[in-house]
Amino acid sequence: GRVHAHRGQRNEQQRDVVKEQAARAEEHDGDLGRFHDPDDFRFVVKAHAWCTQPTQRDPGHTSRGNHTPNAYFLHPGYATEHVVEPCLAGLGPKAGPILFQFSPLDVRTLGGPQHFAVRLHAFLEALPCGPVYAVELRNHQLLSSAYHEVLTDLGVCHCFNIHPSMPALREQM
Image (cartoon, rainbow, N blue to C red; front, side, top):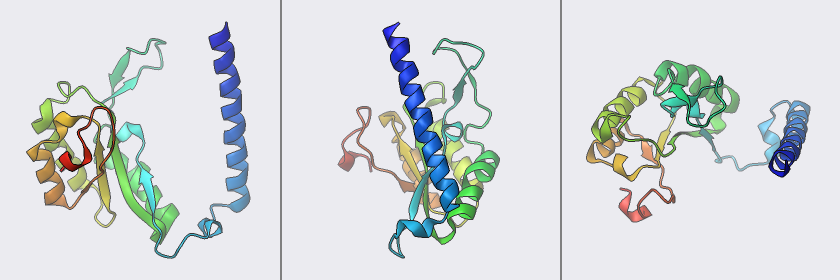
C-alpha cells in the first residue's frame, strides 16, 4: 500500500510539473532567445533510448525482465528523422553536439566489442553530415581499439563520463 501510494503521489507531482512546463513552452512558443544565452552557446541534445537500446520493455508484460528486440537500435533512418532533423530544425544555429548515450548493455548480446564497433560505424557514417556527434558508453568493455578507430575515422567525439561501470576519465581514451 505505501509504495503504491508514494508512487501515485510522485506520478501526480510529475504530471503537474510536465503540465506546467508544457504551458510555459506554449507561452514562449519555443523562443530560445528568452534564455539570454551567449551568442556562442550551443545546446547539447541527447538522443532518446530507442536509438541506443537494443531491446525495449514489452508493454504487454508487467515484468521488468520482459524485453523485445528494438528495431530502431542503431537505425540511422530513424535517428535522422526523429532526432537529428528535429534538433536542427528546432535549434538551428544553437544546435550543438547530438549525444548518443549507451546505458550499460549486455556486451555479449551485442556480439562483443568488435561487432558493436562495426555497427556503430555503419550507424554514425549514415547520419547526415554537418552536426557534431558524440558517443557516451557505460560499458568499459566497449572502449576498444575498434571503438576508438570508429570515432577517429568519422570525427565523432567520445563523451567522457563518471559512471560505476566505467574506468577513470584519463583511461577512457
